[in-house]
Image 1 (cartoon, helix red, strand yellow):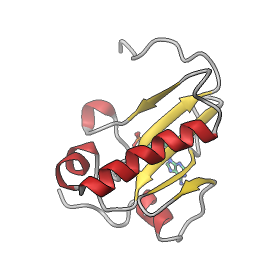
Image 2 (cartoon, rainbow, N blue to C red; image 1 turned 60 degrees about the horizontal axis):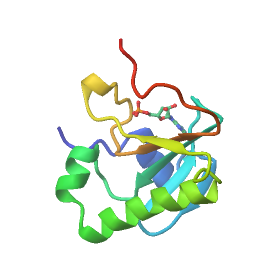
Image 3 (cartoon, rainbow, N blue to C red; image 1 turned 45 degrees about the vertical axis):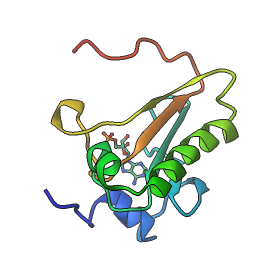
Length: 120
Ligand code: AMP
């Protein structure tokens, strides 16, 4: 399937809809999730048009890959999550219930996060 340039995160990147921005650099944008699942719930997205980790890991340049993952770490540090701890999560495809087809990493924190994955 081709990348859908009408997805909500592509629209955020183009400035067509607002976001609560946390961080931005040439490779990544981070903003608060609109429906937070933890006291801190931030999404980090690459600026390139990648649907999920599948094509991001296969097609992105080394600079994009490094820049993106450095941004994830920077956001976690800037939010004070290093000492208490945090979790990152990225969904790919139907089994994961990925909703938005633009690669994103969720950063969760701000409380003990419980078990790693649902059994259902
Ligand atoms: P996923 O299921 O991994 O694709 O997660 C998509 C996430 O995007 C969900 O946690 C949504 O709450 C979040 N989301 C959807 N639309 C927006 C938006 N306009 N601004 C911020 N977060 C959004």
